[in-house]
Amino acid sequence: MMKMYDFGGGNGPVLAHQHANGGGWVAETASVDESAFVGPDAQVSGNAEVSGTARVSGNAWVSGTARVYDNARVSGNARVYGDAQVSGNAWVSGDAQVSGTARVCDDAQVSVNARVFGNAWVSRVSESVGQ
Image (cartoon, rainbow, N blue to C red; front, side, top):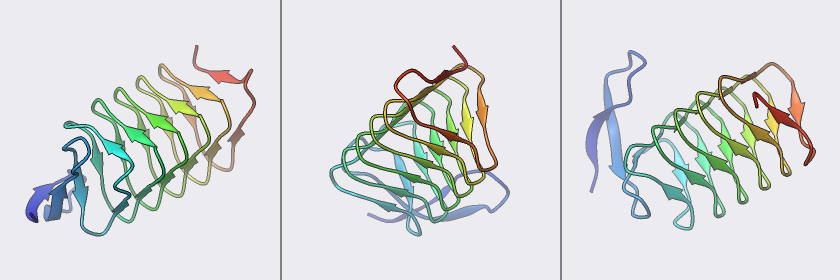
């Protein structure tokens, strides 16, 4: 059922619904697969996409034209926005932020207060940012 929801950011309330798999808020302009999970306090807004078995949980949010897909995880108070992408088995957690055209993929982990931005690329199993 569509309702109005204010995602913050100064745009005021927009058409949105609660995702069937987790109950989190999804803007009608965003795209979230049925197989993806958006937790009850998580948000997906703008033209963002969450697909595959990706999970957005905790107080995390995904916005802009960002994409979270495959088996990727965004949790805690993490933010993924702009044209950023999180994919593979990557995990963005804590108060971390991924923005711009940055890519976090494969088995990489970005956590704590780490910032990945611009055209940065974090991909290897051994790469952990913010630990």
